[in-house]
Structure formats: structure tokens, C-alpha cells
Length: 299
Ligand SMILES: [Fe+2]
Image 1 (cartoon, rainbow, N blue to C red):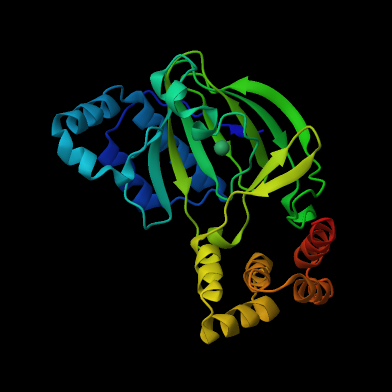
Image 2 (cartoon, helix red, strand yellow):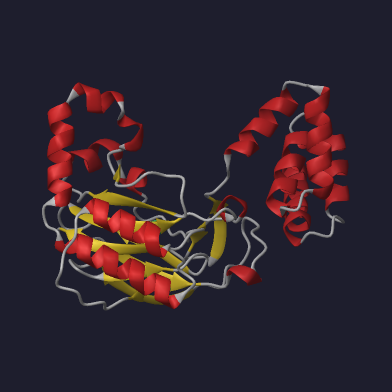
């Protein structure tokens, strides 16, 4: 269950003050003092009841120009700060089932009823509306290899709502949640931690009925790049895939490289590739290799 932080502060600040304050103090969620300092900035910004509305009105006035620069804006997210440092800020919009955007895009577009963890820490604050409800679980990231279908060891904690003014710390690789649409449109504002190692650590989705990992959400761009490069048949790409498959420090990347190799092999060669991978010494690679071999037999 994300930790509720009861920081009380009646003062308010604008977005620029909040961002520069966070830059000054840094945002290191693993250090209590830094976490509390970040929570205070978020609380002060949350006490400012006009900044987000003003920002949205400015965007609406800019009309077509804003639409042209829409890369930072989705139906669900408005970026509040720049990317590229150890944190960024955003506002998340949570439509109710009555909203047009929910009816048009469906629940999956807003990650509703999709149990998942996060590969980053973040602080969140209920800013507008009644707030989304979540079912919460916890699990031990270190005790899983990350194989699809692997037992996750989820422990159900509770169902609760991000009510207005509630401020929570979602802990990376620990808190799992499955969100439900709020009763009416709601907005949360977040400070997200952006660490350098994040891209190498998995974010999972879960099947909570079976208590299993059901997928990896965080697959990066290199997976697609490597598959396409190997699929196009270049010798350098094949060498790189072989190299990564054998010795890359990230088990996930080794698996991606093996999948890229397998993509251009026939069934018998494929089985041999995965048979060797079963003895690779990595729990993730070995368990996924066994799963791939089972799939080959079943195909
Ligand atoms: Fe989430």
C-alpha cells in the first residue's frame, strides 16, 4: 500500500516555485528528508487552486498551435515540468465512465483494472474531483525472476480512494495497484522520480486471480530495434544480438537478444537456441527458455 504522507502546510506556491524548490533540494525518494521535502512542495502546489486551470485555459487559447505541440499532452496526462532531470511533474486526468473520452477510448487507455507495479517512485496528490479508487497489493520484487506466468506472491492490502488532498508515496517495485474509474472526472498531480537505472528494471502487470506476473510493461525501444535489425539480416546486428545474448549485464536484454535471434530461426534451430539458454545461469533467461521450448512443442 503506498505510504500516506500527512504533511500539513497551509501555504501555497506556484508551479515555478515548486519546480525550482525541487531542483534545489533534489528528489531522492529513498531518503526520508528528501521525500518529506518533495511532499511539502507537492502539498503547497496542491493548495494553489488556480495554477492548473490557468495552464489549461492558456493551452485552449493557443488552439491549433497547442495541438501541433501535442506530444507532451495526451487525453490523460499534462506534463508540468521538463524531462531530463532526476524528477518530472505531471497532472493525470482520470475520467469517469460517463466521460466522452472514456466511452471513446475504453478502460485500457487509462490503465483501469490493469494491476501493475511501477519501476519508479512517485508522489501523488488528489487535486480535483472525488479521486480514483484502487485495489492495492504488495509483493517482493527481489523474489521474482520476471517470467511470464511466474508466481508473484501478491499480498492484498486494501481498496481505497485518492480523495482530495490525500498525498501518497508509491514505492517502486513494491506497491501494486489496479485502478477503477472515479465517480466523476478527477485529477491527480505527481512528482515522478526518474533514475538512470529505471530503464533496466522491469515494470510488470499481474493476474491477481492467479497471483502471477502476466506481462512486462516496461519493454524499452531497444527491443524493437534489435528485432528489426536482426530481422533485416545484417551481420553486425547478428553479432550484436549474439553478444548481448551471451554477456549483457541485464538479464532482460539477454532475453530480448535471444528472442531477436529466435525470430529468424527455424523450429529445430530455435529449440536448440533455447535449450542452450536454459543453461545460461540466469534465472529469468532459463525459465523463459523453458517456457519458449514448451510453446514450440505446443505449436
Ligand atoms: Fe499506476
